[in-house]
Length: 541
Image (cartoon, rainbow, N blue to C red; front, side, top):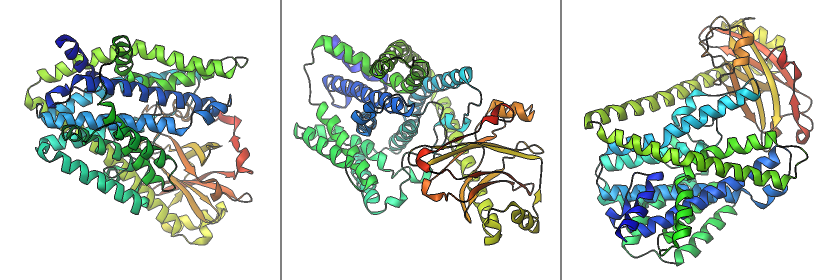
C-alpha cells in the first residue's frame, strides 16, 4: 500500500516537481488531478481537430458540435491545476526560489523548443516562405506574435505563473498565501468587470499580464490547498464550478466571463481532489494520459494540420477527424515517456548545481526575458514615432495619392529610397479580422527594420515592424546575412476597409530618414468572399 501511494504521488512530476502529500494533500487526490489533466488535454485536442477541419474547408459540423467551450475548459483547467500545485509547493517550503524556477524552466522549455523547431522544419519541407519569430522562443509577454506551434500563448501565462510563485517563495509569503490568492483574485475580477478596456486578451504585454482575466484560474487554484485544509471543499464545488464556467461562457462581459469561467474550473479541480478509490486499471491509463498531457498539448496542432494536409480528398471527413485525434494520441504516447524521462534527468542536473550557479542561471533567464520585452517595447515606440510622423504631415498627405506623400515626406527630411524593397503577399479573411502579410527591407541597412504603415481613407490602419524570418525573401533579395527578419503580419477589422479606396503601404527607416511607398492594394469586396492572394511570389516573394 505504501508503495502504491508513493507511486501515485510521483506522477505529478509530469507537470511539476511537487510531491504534495508533504503539504497535507493525499496522493489519492493527486491521482484525481491527473485524470482531470488528461481530460483537459483531450478537450483541447477535440476542439482544435474540429476547428482546423473547418478552417481547411473539409467540414464545419464538428466545429459546431465541439466549440470554443471545449478549449476553454481544457486551458482554464490546466491553469487551475498549475495554481493548485504551485500553492502546494509554496506551503511545503522545501525548495528555494532559484531551484524552483529552474525546475520549471527545464520542465517547459526543452520539449517546447524541440517541437517548435520540428514544426518549422516540417513546414519548410512542404512549402517556401515559412515565417517564424525568434523572440517567441522565450515565451515572454510581448503581445500578439506569430508562434511556430500555435498554442504558445498559454505557455506565456504558465511561465508567468512560475515567476509569481518564485517571487512568493523568495519573499517568504507562504503564511500569507490565502491572503495573496484572495486579493489577487479580487483584483482580477474587479478589473475585468469595471475596466475591461485594460485587458489585452490572450496576448498581454508585461504590465497588463498580472491582472489578465486568464490569471483568475491560477489565482483561484492557489487557494485550493488552504480550502482543503479548512474543510470547505465538497461536492457542491462541482455544481458551483460548472455553473460559473457555463455562466462565463455566455456572459456578455467577455473579460469578466473569462475570469468567472477560470474560477469555475478551479472549483472543479478542487472538487476532483475529493475523489479517491480509483479502479487500478483505469488509474494506470489516466496516469499515463496525464503524464503525456504536456506532450499532447504541444504536438496536437502540428499533427492535426499534417493529417489534414495529406489526407485524401475522397476520405470521409469523420474518418479524417478521427485519424487526426488518433495519430495525435499515438505521437503523445511516443513522445510523452521521453519527455518525462528528460525532465527527470534535467531536474536532477539542476539539483546537483550549487546555490550560486542556480542564482546565476535564474538571473540569466530573467535578463533574457526582460531583454526580449525591451526589444518589443522599443519596436512599439518606433511604430508610434512613425505614426506621429505621417499623421503630422496633414490630412492631404494621408490621402492615397503617392505623389502627395512624396511631396510631404521630403519636407521633414525623409528621402524616397528605391533601395527599400517590399511587397504585400496576401490579404486574407480570418473570420473577425483581415490578415495582411508581406515583407519589407532596406537593402542599404538590412539590420535596421523599417516601420510599415497601411494607410487607407485618411487613416493609418496598421503600424508594424518586420519580425519574421523568411528564407525565400532573403534569397530573392540576395542577402547573405541569415538573420534579417523581413516578413511581417498585421491585422485590421473588416469594417475599416472602404470598397472604393485602396490601401497604401509605406515603409519608413526612421534612423536613416528614408521611406518608400512600396505597394497598394484594393480593399476586398465583399469581405465575406475575401481571399486575395497573388501569384507572382515565384518571381518576387
